[in-house]
Image (cartoon, rainbow, N blue to C red):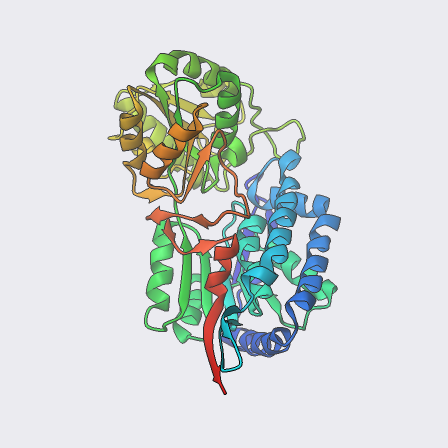
Amino acid sequence: MKATTLSPIDNSIVFEQAFADQQLIDSSIKSSRAAQAEWAALSVQQRAAICRSAVNYFTENKTAIGEDITRQMGRPIRYSANEVNGVQERALHMIDIAPQALADINIEDSERCKRLIRKTPLGVVFVVAPWNYPLLTTVNSVFPALMAGNSVIIKPSVQTPLVGEHFTRSFEQAGAPAGLVQALCLNHGSTSELLASGDIDYCCFTGSVNAGQKIEAAIAGTFKGLTLELGGKDPAYVCEDAPLEKTVSELVDGAFFNSGQSCCGIERIYVAKSRYQDFVEAYINEVKQYHLGNPLDHATTLGPLVRADAADWVRKQNQQAIAAGATGCIDSKAFTMDDGSSAYLAPQVLINVDHSMSVMSEESFGPTVGIMPVSDDAEAVALMNDSDFGLTASIWGQDLGRIEQLGNQIQAGTIFMNRCDYLDPALVWTGVKNTGRGASLSQLGYNAFVQPKSFLLQN
């Protein structure tokens, strides 16, 4: 059987690839283990040199990689190449901090005794990557796993298979041991069987809650580690002292960049009552500036969703909310590419919403956002926490102390002040509740990829 990638631009075939059979999977595991043994014998500095060279591949091929991303998942081409910039930022940071993050923890070094904790690699790390940010989400796992001395097998999304080829090619050209970084085209059944086999030593998964539950069930009983980054319904709170122009601009971008297909995109906004009317008016005007069109056109600022059924889900949420009393502030007829049934979907801003509506409680993953007024901080916090998810939350205002205290009360892995929809590689990336478990990036992100080993050496 073949995996076929259809472009959301025009439903044309972008790529076809045969699913890996068991023989190929077995040989990949075998070569991955052989490469890992060779790689682990290198010093951290030697690994860093090869990893830096691999990063250079992405930088040198930025334009072509960006076009690949656009054709596969529909992001406007004017933005796609910027994902490579994020690859460079995150990968180089994780490489830079590796010597400190992976250093021995020395407890005692005396004439009598030497005691230390050494961080040793796990073996083969399996990375199950999503399609919405196919480079960036994969980088979060690949580079720290490699720097820690592991080998990596990537399962790219069927929607963005060329990303796997770019990763394997980058390390081949960098002079890494053969088989150190591989990509496998796997169907759901083969993925589950590989996890259940115990042949991999750690799995990093990014995707939906439903898929995460299946991954967790498949790996159960193998005693292998698992990181899950799942859904989000990320909120923003606009305080009464927030600077209006900057706040509106950033929150429009946070909600509609990548057609809203971001795990940490803004999906619900709470605004202090005294600023509500001004905020909504300015927000609507900003959203109306978007141009929905073919993402290969450099004038396009809003491309199609990844599939027509993904757009249909958002349409359904909008329609249900309006039927329940919400007001849609954007006329979809002004966006001529939205024919009501394709992957091309006009942006929407909803007011008069509440948490009984799906659009304010279930992940949309599309270009829609609901805006509610709040009377005070307590109401804002209660509404922000009224969710099954907890990836990020952003607060907009000028009182750092107040916002830090609010952040202590909000159930989320990252608290932003006057920023949203961004990963700082020096800070840990994690979530609570149904957003998943585990952590990536920062020094803490290395903990997933090592096995601590104690030494007590006594004279």
